[in-house]
Image (tube, rainbow, N blue to C red):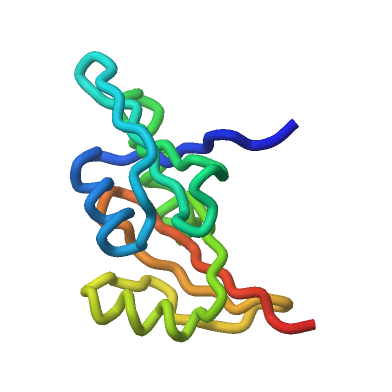
Length: 130
């Protein structure tokens, strides 16, 4: 068994696609109209056939209260691994991305948290050398 698709709820699919591709560097994999929305996924350019991230509309009534609560507590909706957190933080800051948690050591990792502009916090993680 393998993870094929995972999702993040977004308040605007077009804005989310712009952020996740132009800022974070993912590539669009699928864009299929589904009623009023789209089956819209992105993938890492390093793993184009890997796990797809579904930019899922947040229309369900449970999403708002759930997301508001986890954002208020500073809990990221998703986590992405990077090779060099400082380099990625500098690159994203230069693109105007707002970080809610600057890079910090957290046990075996360095981590930072950013705002995806679509209602979510995103964690970036760099594994420290053993």
